[in-house]
Image (cartoon, rainbow, N blue to C red; front, side):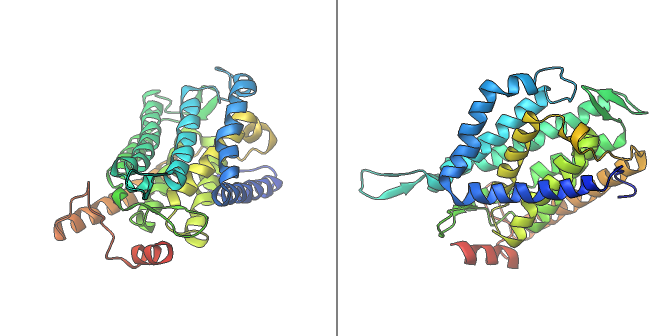
Length: 320
């Protein structure tokens, strides 16, 4: 891919494509069948935690999967998957004889933006940490090649803006169809693209030679379903595909380095460009939201911002 990647064998891109569709397929399985979701994001990781990951993701291993970041990311992603399933399916009969649902509770609706913000903040801290390493000519840290530069600061700021622009979570509801998806109508395409650009830049900056998979393929695996399979459920798609990928890479840590490597070009210009684009787009979303808040006298901690837009209305019409 020219400026961004170099792969010695084009068959690696065929494997990349397989990974993309496998993530989408298992996401659909976990989304459509509650028993599959519980198995994939509850039972399987429990077994792996006890019998597999202490070996394959041991601290200091040669593939870099034993870092604090990988372990924290794994369990925060799985917590998101299970938490969103609880929002979708937990219900009870109250003293009034009526059926009540967890997603009807405002305190429960604070969980999705909280777990999302935590995941973004983890990556922001990592970008700043890579800058602090002072690897201005590039080098290996925790068995992963990276290069420090202004792009780390730029993308860290983009991530902070991405957190600030999370909005409309009190409008989350569960779809009326049989899959009972967690729908967040105020999370429309500008924010999603801003997140994708920021997250891709983060993976390019901090996990450079793995970013074709954990950045490009992983982001497409949740963005494609959001636009073409189940609109309004981006965060659910994101949590499940992230959980699937990180469980796989914790189990088969040599995959991106030995089995099907797609390394970056290690070109500083590429690092600067991807982070500059991410920062510019996130700044644009932040400015747009600020203008909408002022113009329409909205409370960003309570009100939905995009209710006047066509994508918001389409998602509500399809699911409520």
